[in-house]
Image 1: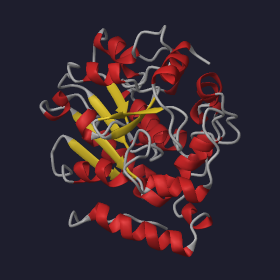
Image 2: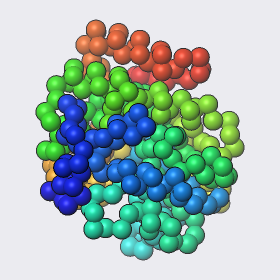
Image 3: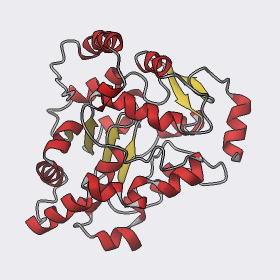
Image 4: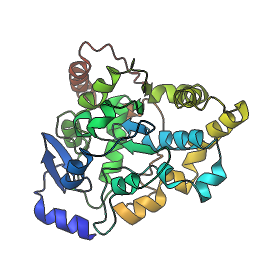
Length: 309
């Protein structure tokens, strides 16, 4: 157990759905996103050149991180493997896993050049300047049924978690108490409503599965990387294909899962199945009907339509 985890375990009460969480402005947050960091991010200096990737957990974050990193480095896989600029290493600014390490947001403050910043934070916990400066925001939305199943697998393989039955987990997912992401609707809909903002690219996971090349082109154009050749785009598509990433230990996040979460990466890699409609293997008829009712409330009159198969 790290010093940080031990510290927060002693300070924050446990709950049924997570061994270690706390409440922050009505949202359930995990120990590795401490309140001190969230406070600091409220005054984090955002730069107009920053690129933010924002997602609800388990919505293709690692996949899109790789796409954006390759796009912003001219498809140079060798550079990524050896000498990628620190500002492009895409660490989550809200994470603080080891107490002895300098927080990632502090490291970002000290870097020069264009910065790539992924995060799962809900709008109210983001640095306010994200909404005040012309930063680029790529938002990836995944249908919540598949996201729920993926989150469940990722969540339950950690030895730090209390064993959880699927039906109990699903009830938490449908509530506002899901650790870190909160409820899916509160995370996704605010960005859907900003989809016409010229600084926001709202993209669906399901569209990426259907036509990855088209989506890579859209991301490149949005990030003003129009100079990428067809050959470079093809290379990015190949390196970011599910088959390639599934067989690459770095893309699966094996080392990170072992070192930080003590998880067997073979049980829940960051790249697991990558398909649309996997939720059907888990939901009962009754669970699906209940989920649909909550989903309708999340969507409301927004006009957002997600694909579930």
